[in-house]
Image 1 (cartoon, helix red, strand yellow):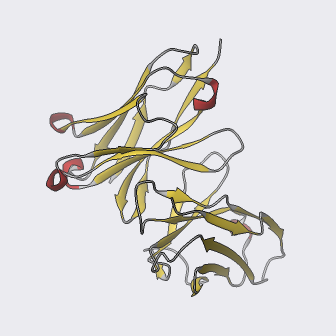
Image 2 (image 1 turned 90 degrees about the vertical axis):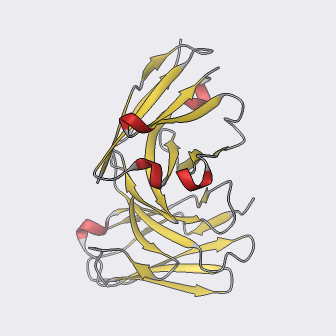
Image 3 (image 1 turned 60 degrees about the vertical axis):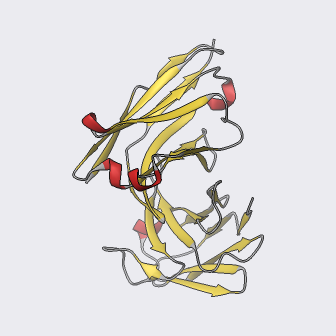
Length: 107
Length: 117
């Protein structure tokens, strides 16, 4: 199974800041990675797929990156509404589908 | 396009429960439909999936639920079901159904399953 390790597990930032979180895959997943945002009591919402492709309606402040097996989600100009937990998920080699452990962003 | 889960509730250890995922706005048969759960205060965990009709609705399951959970479909109802048997406290979670287009692009609101005596 492909393991995804997210870091940091949590971070605190201010409105207007830029934050970056990382998702490290245990092997090459060839950009078959999605990022989700989840707020308390709500279902996750997909932000990006194929590591870089912004989903419809998602602000362009969310940017996906990649370096080898490390994938990043950067949020520019942080807004209060960005307070949430962010998960990565791989769909390169399934089953099983696997998720990272999440990064909680506190603003 | 919407998915709506139902059927959650309180069940005793060793019991069974059947969750439903009602699909509207698209034809479920043309898509993989997955189940994902989230235990209290924990992250997301994939439970299993049913493939689309071109892949003969093949099912796959995560190791912790294999041989206990069964995913099925009713095309006439445009619905997907999750039959959960031999439930334990570790199955306590919010269960989501989700449409898979590589990423999970559409999610239901979730239904709570609590396994407790």
